[in-house]
Length: 313
Image 1 (tube, one colour):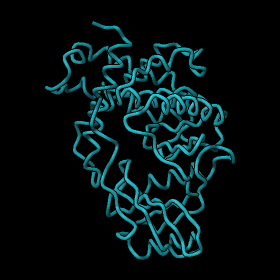
Image 2 (cartoon, rainbow, N blue to C red; image 1 turned 30 degrees about the horizontal axis):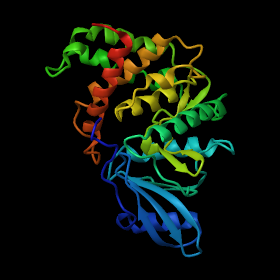
Image 3 (tube, helix red, strand yellow; image 1 turned 120 degrees about the vertical axis):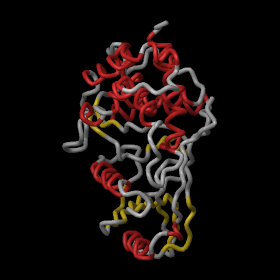
Image 4 (cartoon, rainbow, N blue to C red; image 1 turned 90 degrees about the horizontal axis):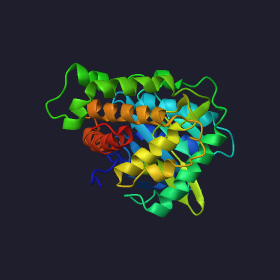
């Protein structure tokens, strides 16, 4: 079980430029009188539950180019997706946005909930596995007009082993080194099977889930694309493996995998292992000092799952 968690160094409400705070308050329609800053996730930006003078509550995300030059566009992508989601989907409603070209803030309805325990508890994991299955069904056909397409969005990700094979690092796992070319071919083959007509979240892990009574909510949608209905279930189980759970029992008789060749799932998981192995060795992006360690920790647990599924000696 890995001690590494999905967390970074976040801005606080108080540290935001005054113009950004004012822009958020314009969206809210009332001044913010209290803010509880949230941890979790890798964005260097703000994540806060806020209370307004009129008694209203909301959840606010904000980031600017001074923190990371790419993060504002990530918020813009999330705004496009969440604004297009139909009513009834378990995703907090986007109330409005603030964007001055450098800073982007998103204002959502607040969900009175909490993240699952980390590491995953079996009871909570089972509930969320079922909820993800229903989420994928509810997002088929894809409800977002002209979203990005899976094969394009995961193209570079599934070629991570090709990158490693071109210049193998000295610290590669011995099994991984022996099978590097096979892994590269296997992962690349996933590009033939990831397309579909489901809106895929693609970043499902414990810190992007909220539990509220019997309800499960899904947050942080910037990486969403149109793809195969089973991808999010596999992504969640990859996170379960990271926390020490055996993902295989959850895959047995899974309703979204009944007609999917198991080798296609193995290829996709291999692609994720290659991505973590290649990206985790790169320098840390600005404002995200913990990201690479988290990727390398995920590489280790995802690789172990790939090794088990392939059965290669």
